[in-house]
Length: 499
Image 1 (cartoon, rainbow, N blue to C red):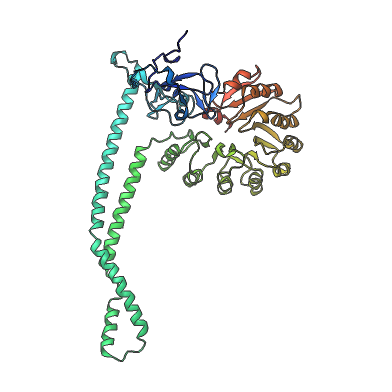
Image 2: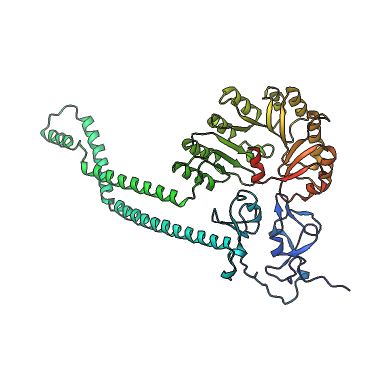
């Protein structure tokens, strides 16, 4: 009788009760913990390398196949490797690369997105022991890393010096505790004097007269207390200015007269520091997606608008693609507040029409999200040029017919969270809008929940699909794709072509 294999089919390491413990995927196939952690993952879970089925179950809830663990085996820790053990915070992949321009670790996906034009080094090449075997590019990277370390050392030294100043100032403030107590006592005394003065409308007693005279002598506040407060405030202001100066020095500034792309809070701070140093972009693009949303987007835009006199291309796709029933992340307030600066507007029909009525600008790209049946009526008053249309499941099928009757020209159709049962609904909307002889169109499917059968049905219904934007690792869509359709991943680089 054949015995079950006792080693992982991916790394061929023997199963144990530690890092190589055997875990069962939903499809029934078993691999070790180390390899499952490194399987490609997206919103639908991990994909089994054997049968390509998805497993959405978290790793800590997967069943351990104890029958594959040899009796008496000891748990083994993973061997340290030159590559980073910490997964990428954006894509959860291994960080095997290093960006020399940004001085940060990257995964393979990062190198194809926001860092595509940067100088990238493979960690294995950068950290190899044989220095004589280093190519010239790696030697140059080593030199740049060393220079960065020297600048960091100087910055840290400046921070330490400033911290000492602040600590000394804090001690000086604490030494004023006695004065603070005296001021509190003076407040109580003055309050009592006020009550006495209110009662003494007529003075007939000499003792009362002297008491009131004493009150009058204390009406003028002592200047010594004022001087102390002003001195401390001046020192605090100086420390604050010095701190802001050091903060801008440690932040890598963006290049002047080039397109600046802000996809995170950190990049927003870089842009602000660059603007504070009198650097200006040729174009400022702010992109917030469902995989990398920018927290506090409205506040960040306020700060950018205060320093940047030019226009802002805002792509709030996390709000544009939000699931049905969710709030709009304050997009209405953002459009109203920054409408004069926005070259692109993403919003509901009401928000888009309000922006047009305000006549903020003559040229603007409009992108409309339809949420409900009432939007069908509002669609009749929209602009005739719409770059992107987003439809959620609650939108009637007639929306395509309404937009066509209005004469709207749509570049791209978005259907977030599309499921197998939604394919016919989506196809009806597109069939009402496009005639057979119309040019091919583009489709965007964020967070799709299609199975292999649903993907095949999609391409069967829409043969004139020119471009399909999909989530990474969408093997079910790629395999069903026809030869006339170009499948494009929803990466930062590809999305920026829309701006």
